[in-house]
Length: 326
Ligand SMILES: O=C(O)CCC(=O)C(=O)O
Ligand SMILES: [Fe+2]
Image (spheres, rainbow, N blue to C red):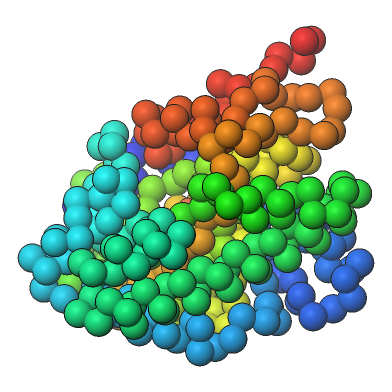
């Protein structure tokens, strides 16, 4: 049983009635750019509609995902343990963080996907085609969003998306499966501590941006600037976009990376989420064009190393902040 760790659990009560921004990408470009910037300043998070990703790309990916997670445990374990890529169950990262989920973490380059598909599926070509197609769509969407952000922030055209387009980009892809409620968890709260069971503990994503899609089962919560906990209802045709730590640094804290968590599944249906994490190359500098800088100079590779050795919920960016007077 995995309960929210008091050390990492924000105190904010659930403000489910607050609705997070919803952005329609088919509207006028200038309007979309300004709305994205506002959402990232206010929440570090928004929902995206009319994103242009074809349904068949999503459904082919989902089919492979359901196929994989419905295999017997011993078969799934052949694709693990995660190192860091591969199949993992309950243990998240290297530092003892646990959640009520299982997941697969994948590289995004087509060669690596095609090699890994051999242990993921009995039809590796079909698996690899579905993943490659989905990841190409996510990369394109991520670049489109970053171009809107650059426009809204009056930065040079493509100055953010070029980080993701770099051949050596370090983007990755995780698919999470939160098993259906088994009827033993008593409303999915740990009665002895009276706190909810956690599917994926509270954290910020370290990369530039995350594009998330889930099936129709809820559980995702984000924390607002005022530390209010907001439940984000799932929607079958939308994506959710999260500002990550690297974008907080690149924008010199104009955008704030959003803290979020997932409650353990309380439904009789599996919850699936597909997370595309857009990251630059390890050598890319995260220094911001906005002055005076609020962070020291460091590369994505340096930051990633720090993330690797810390707990999921740690506020890792604090280590890189410059004091007010420097
Ligand atoms: O399952 C979700 O919707 C979010 C999971 C998450 O935050 C992550 O994989 O980083
Ligand atoms: Fe996350």
